[in-house]
Length: 397
Length: 190
Image 1: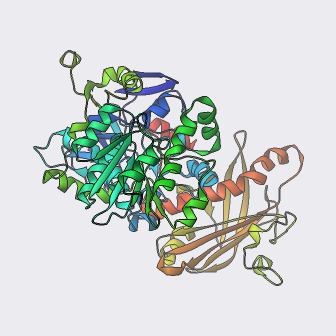
Image 2 (image 1 turned 180 degrees about the vertical axis):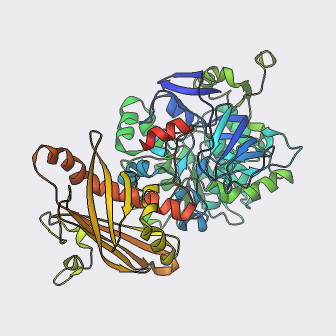
């Protein structure tokens, strides 16, 4: 099959590799019809994530058609499914509590050592995101092997196009969980740092959960405009002082809830070595933890902080004093995608949520390397790239 | 290995977590390793699976074979570095259904060892705590060096990984792998 493979910093290629096979009873093989490039994929592209190996297949936002099933899979050939980016067993203690991203059994036993050392306990596996998160082949390919296919993938009814449901795989549930973790109450003003896909879905979700006002913070005009389309007010941090603006826009109280969706944006990345690498390489290090510090300072007393943004290691100058003195609550975590999928699919079917506004580009899989470069170079114009393995090159041109 | 459970004058933490590296426990061997894992299944089921030693290679990656002999004895062939194997014959010293399986190696073992696998109800109805405590005698000499490489470091790592695989198999019915072709999976297991 053809697959987008990683070879080094800014070096991704579409290669011919072996087709996946059913290896465990609960496996299914999915023929990919749509697969997105995630903002966190750019951290792999930029070489920030350790334990990548040449030839690793990327991609953790994908959907497609079931073409093969193991004896214990509950899927049927021909069904269309969206696959959650978290690989979770559905039967351990954490899965029984719907904490799917904390699944005990998603990672191969040997890979669990690193997570144990870095975080105290290993987390769930992830598709296409380095050997720290299991080394699973991702979905930017023609086919993918999906473990635990009886509990992960959600079946999509006929007649709904891919673009409407693809983001159930990661960013829509992540934005939704972010808003849920903010404990939104009627009348609340919610501030959202970062208007990437997760931030934009958090804006949308916050309104659906009853927020009276949402204030979106970013510096890309195009992204702020998308937030405004949902009814958010905006702060461009290159034009205005964020803390001062938030205080003035809330009558001196501060937002009731703050959502940091900036962070490192890398799923499940690790430890101080990565952290140091980022810190020394660019201004990103300071810029990016700046958002959580600013959220803590701006948040109203007794307010709530939600942090969908991914942090991997350690952070300097965390305002622990402000956090304690103001009695804030912080909720965070990788998304338990499986928990949110059914309700969010219904919301899409009932047309309460539309995610297609986000897609700025559709490309055939063969042009995935161009897609990475475009996404990397033009974050204002390129909001989301969806790769279509079935798309003809001529059609895309 | 009765003294492993003796808590006189100590805190409640297992001796396998002792800061005292010189601790010696067990009838055979002077290095101790131990690990506990919570498995979301009833202890009777877990005991039954483990007690049938022919099941062990399905989650213990280093085992080449376990042959059940008569009288609670079994012969073990285990992978060692450099394409070698080490062998021993074990006798069951304690066996209580749903609770414990303990063994000790007979004289002439390449690596004298003893241990116990305990099954206890986990608090809060969370299934079973499975604890493996293994003590072993790292041999000397040249072969000892090779074996030591495996047996001074590896048993702790191996026990930890084997227990995780046991948990995966019991909770999910399979052992997780990131391979995507049969060939890769076979190479992983080789």
